[in-house]
Image (cartoon, rainbow, N blue to C red):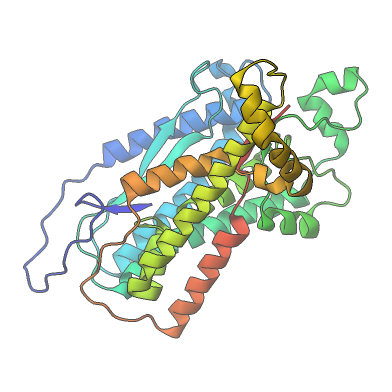
Length: 366
């Protein structure tokens, strides 16, 4: 994600204002954050591998592949922004990587990082420059993640490999993997790639097992994060792209997108309500409420179950984008329209959003 120095606002472009101020290099900080993030990603990768003793640093080598893959995806995204900014002579920092360690009992599940950010320290002068900088990151990251996903699918091992991760399955003579625990949600791109590239001599794991396979894990997670960042809202990358493409129309697009994720996220509350009411409340006030609405919920559950499958995280993301990121995009001074080539790339970027979007995100099944 790219941010500027003025709390995310693009400063007016002042031609002829003199030589830009020199900024102190922060190489030790960049390197230090990268090293810490690499370590937290190794820790996360070790945990995803199924290693029970993942807090023991002597086991972290099992997360090495995962750490390399996820930081390669992340770096491709951030350096896409960086080099596009340099091309347009916009002063930008190197990426600041953000570590996110696993903390048992507090943060038991982590991908090892919360991403990275670069800061724009000079104005972005035009919609064309805004588009190039905004689109270069997610497209570069998407290409790398998709490459990892395809490789992971083509190199799938045989079914017996799952026994090295879950030896208890072998002990219990389990040949059909139970679908419970943490599941990665569905998206169009993963489904299509799986149908095309999955090794016919291998075994495609269910969505509650793919995180044990580093290339599948990082490939899916890269698509998922891309969809979060490509929403056409405010100063997310998707907001940069849609503002550059459609100008003032972006305000309406942002609000439509925001209401969509709000509704999807709110549908998770329906599932919570259904589970709460689906017990014996006889003799209590809750029973009165249950008698009023539970028949409708049951009908929806049986006939249109997808309305219960929204990811609660979309509700959280709706709150974050509304309160902190904001829905509107600040203007740029040179309000130039994009050429046909950039508009075509923009539509490709929006296709990436739709094909990577996961209605149910990450969720637990019992």
